Amino acid sequence: MTGTAKVARGRAAETRGRRAEFACVIYLRLTGWRILAQRLTGRRGSGVGEIDIVAARGNTVAMIEVKARDDLTDALGAVGVEQRARLVRAAERFLARHPEIAARDVRFDVMTVGRWYWPRRHPDAWRPD
Image (tube, rainbow, N blue to C red; front, side, top):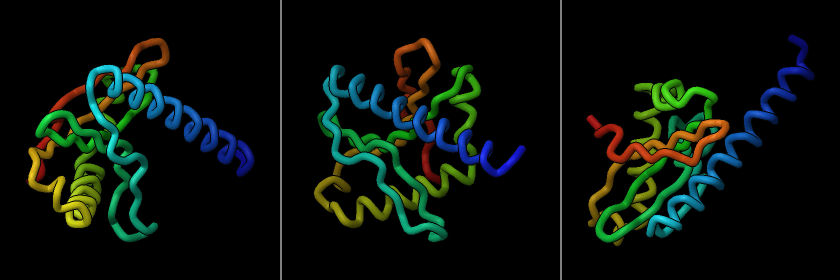
């Protein structure tokens, strides 16, 4: 595969991911969630991951990872151990900057988006070690 083809695939994946995140935000809002933040990133190489969506409803704050795949089972399995650790570090950093949110119940959710499906939410997908 040439460099140009890799760049094109990367751009297509980025576009698909942004569309999936947009669909998830709409779904969350329609189901009563308030979006607190989107696309939170740490510095490149810092070991801090990106949190796609931070949403709140009642006393619950969800750190949400969005995965878009043709097969929803593949999407759910795409959040590996290393990525979970990076997401936990990103969440800790976000909560340190927002102590008013840290007092709430915080959990990690995954939302999967298939090609022809509404987003599916998988609440409390994992717990930090």
